[in-house]
Length: 60
Image (cartoon, rainbow, N blue to C red):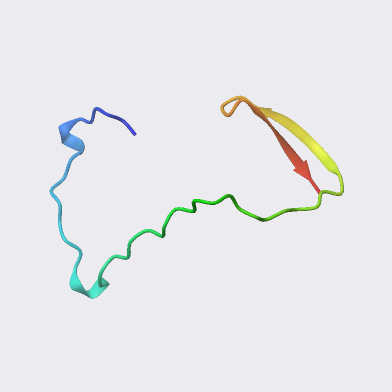
């Protein structure tokens, strides 16, 4: 997010119409690591992701 915003980009808050109902809250964040595992038959390709600074793999 940007920490500086031009005032011309701001607008007044307006409540949602009642016809849309109440907004639900976000689900709870998962605290334990996922238990899903996958079996990889073959690595088809790989590439270096410059922004994440890590390899990405295409697997079958």
